[in-house]
Amino acid sequence: MKLHFHKYQGTGNDFILIDDRKMQFPMDNLEIISQLCNRKFGIGADGLMLIRPHETVDFTMIFFNPDGSKSLCGNGSRCAMAFATHLGIVKDRMTFETTDGIHDGFFKDGRYHFHLFDVNEISVSNGTYFINTGSPHHVELVENVQKFDVLAEGKSIRNSSKYEPAGTNVNFIQKKESSIDVRTYERGVENETLSCGTGVTACAIVAALENYQSPIKVETKGGNLQVSFAKVDDTHFKDIYLAGPAEKVFEGDIEVELSN
Image 1 (cartoon, rainbow, N blue to C red):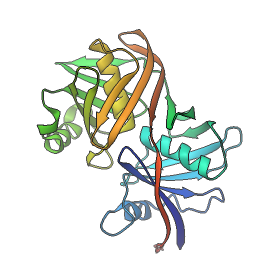
Image 2: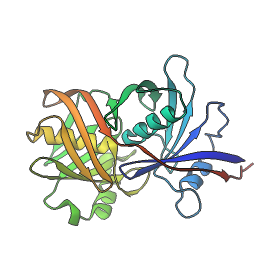
Image 3: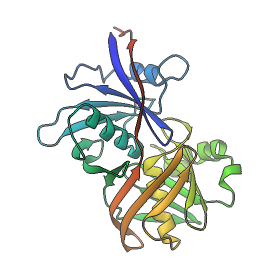
Image 4: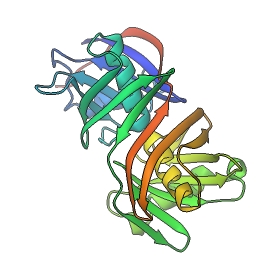
């Protein structure tokens, strides 16, 4: 089977995007998804997305982690917005359905702004936070995030009994004077990524609990993002937007072998 694909990245979080408006991609074949996302034997990516038609909104975006699991992806959603614009499906404003429901967003001043659902529950335990921003996120504050062992600590927390059976994404924050610095271990990728949109959003909400004001600037290894919101109280946040770049890297064709 020959596939035409596009590669996009949002602050270093990279994705394979496929125009699947004819609905021909074998999305039940998880081996193909893992193969395509493999950085040694495939295209290489932090996830794969299909753009498909939708009856009432602009399009459907189906997101897969490299292991074939599904989750909401903030940086991926911004890349899907850029790709849908490239395909001529939308212009500066759009509404689309993805893993956890229907979202909207817009493009302004060189950045794609993705509207996340309200956060209505925040758990705090022994100085750590748990927030679901469409995907589950454990958040900790650390002193020097750049020297922190994100891979080892993230893997340990992700697989801890506290978060069984599904596990969680794990984020570490360092507070700065006018921004926060974030590193993330992503579930499904099973490694640290250069950036995680839903993780950055969860970290910005934790920063708000540490008296930061909206919009919050967030630094990641892959670049800078911004999170804006309206804080109702310490457990309720609404009008949450993740803003940042989404850029095409290249496009191409690849042959994939379908197993019987």
